[in-house]
Length: 162
Image 1 (cartoon, rainbow, N blue to C red):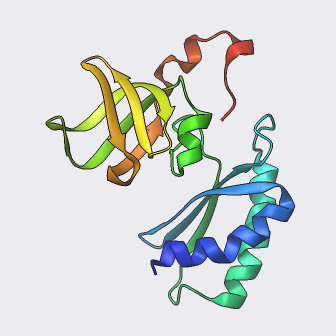
Image 2 (image 1 turned 30 degrees about the vertical axis):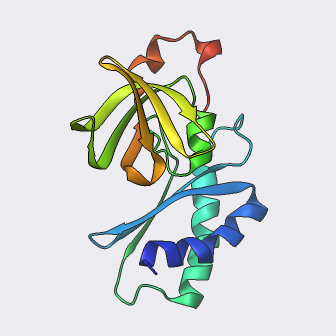
């Protein structure tokens, strides 16, 4: 099991009672990044929320001690370039601009930019790109994130909260 997956299993039970969901865990160059968001998508993440999560997660990590070396804990919100990690993210952010990279060539490319159409029952991600529609198997995705380039152009009331 990957270190990130092990840490995710440890801290998810801590986040749920605090009304947060784990988005992603990453560990690189001595920094453990915990990315979380409120369970209620209409609530914005605050610096105070990050501090609360940090204290809760630190307590578990101190006891379980999954990282034997010194590290820096960083708790963040997903932000505007939010990563799309689980299949539900592809439904939730349907209609938004996305950037997707794949593990292998699909239609001769590995990078796709376009409007997310969603995910189907077979876990195929649909994206409308400038070159036309593309379907990408979920398990072929190396990385995906929202593209915030048009977000600032939307009227304030119509901006989706992520």
